[in-house]
Amino acid sequence: MYIIGHKNPDTDAIVCALIAADYFTQLGMEVTPIRLGELNKETEFILKHLGIQAPELKTELEQDAKICLVDHNEKSQSIDELEKYQIEWIIDHHKFSLNTATPLNIRAESLASTASVLYKMYIENDLEISKKIAKLMICGILSDTLYFRSPTTTTIDKQIALALNEIAGFEDLEAFSLQMFDAKSDLSDFSAREIVTLDYKPFEFNGKKVNIGVMETTNPKFALDIKSDILEAMKQEKLEQGLDGILFVAVDILNEKGTAFTLDEFEINMIESAFDSKKLEDNLFDIGSVVSRKKQIVPKLESYFA
Ligand SMILES: [Mn+2]
Image (tube, rainbow, N blue to C red; front, side, top):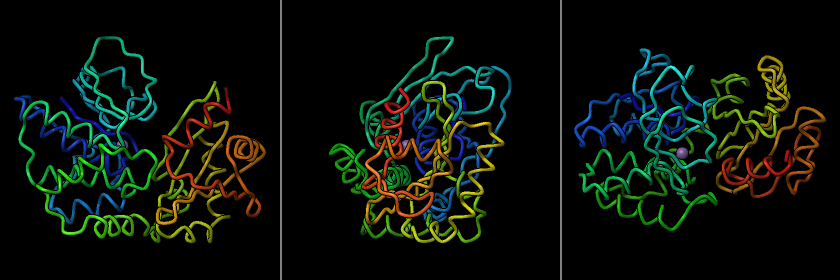
């Protein structure tokens, strides 16, 4: 069975492919973790720091291959031609919109990271959590919660991170999270198009195709300084992907604030109606303490388009 995180993988998608591979191996299965895209700089930093190899990049598998989806369940975010494969497992913490042809195993909880869900699965099955796996789990939690800042964070996620650190032994979790976020914020060698699509997910709201890119950063000024390039990249994306709308949000991790880049009428109406927003300058809106696509952006757009 192949373990697959979502396209445009973030840290949780990558570490959970590695963690789930260890989990299923301990249960006696033969599994291979893979990834569907390049690592972001945060994940690159983490794996280098921990001395752990990334899952192999693989975007096509043999027909009927057995797969386990981690950290996603939407077809549009998964491996191309998903219907060619047999989904055996989904381990996730997102909203569901998947229809499957056959029965399967699903484990989903509304915790802040898929790593937290996997932690519970280890405990329930009385499996050993090695130092390496504990570190990967903590990184998944720190990344998805923005060091417990995101409103997706639950007390369970915090308890899990603390319990894991008994094994992992990070000296200072907050300091380490800052190193992660600084690594992620260094986008100097990326094009505007790459920045817009780095942490990027397609959604369909009431028949409207809207893609949402998020840039979690400790340096929001970087994106504001290249506003016109970002808008141009969004325009190209919207055109080439045939989208109804495109949204790009720069999330200031340390100050817990979101700034939305809006391309056109469609996006401006969307932002003004769906969010408590303040226009900063042309095509730029302060959308307040919005840091989570999953919990704050997507639900607001769901109700706006409904
Ligand atoms: Mn996640």
